Image (tube, rainbow over all chains, first blue to last red; front, side, top):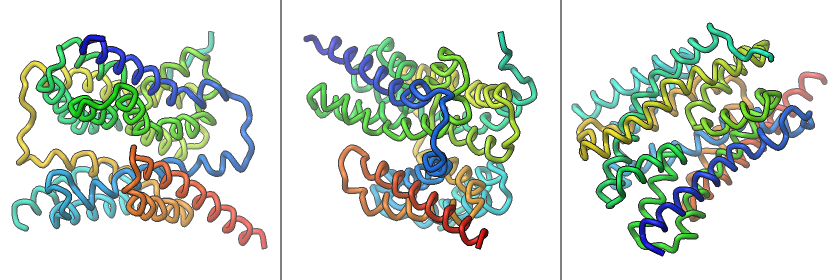
Length: 107
Length: 237
């Protein structure tokens, strides 16, 4: 198999696989009723996945070769705090970004 | 045919999705640059971003291909990074499961971290939303995000240069995710789920194939459901 063919195989398999994962429940369950205990768990999906996704990125940033970085830690705390208090995603993003740039400049 | 179009929901979604162009842009460009430098022709670089639309999985695949890993290992590892998408799919099902199959397929194709998180947040904030409003909001969120993912990949591949490190754009992803997490912490159950997720993600970071995140996700969901149930029971007593 030539290298180019191998790459096409990877692209197509990843495409089908990713779509399959994304369609898994939407497609198979559709509008059938799900039991209450399942729904109860699903209500917490976002808040159970996203924090776990960012925690290593915040604590061990690739840009500093995995060393905790004060500017990034402070920016993360400010972003989370602003989001929590204001409930405004945009305000949190810009507040966090401003903190990061100030921190990188001064810290 | 039923209409799934709700103009004001679409534009509200569009407005909420717009700032995420700031993340998708640099990230997509970086993929375009790195993939091109790895020797992929333009058509394959673009196919990656159009067919897969999952930055982290795409970078994983590139890295493993550069390390000459066996094809099956490349595919399995990259898909493992995307396992969380199945959780997103399950979480969206109570909201959008009633759509016709081809529309559900479109939603599935464009189900990424940003479109999922913003939509689920909006659906919870406004539980009385109709199916049309929910669908239009989701479409609104992805409208600025997806085209810019493709475009940024193209620009990166053609220009061959990403945004300099001094802009610290590596942190754009964490900041935008944290900005979404803040407003999600509405109850004790949400906070507990998030804390358990963070602790587990860090504890199990050593697991291969990003499986630590799946452990964290499941543990977080169980925690949230448990705390919710317990506070409900207390409320009744």
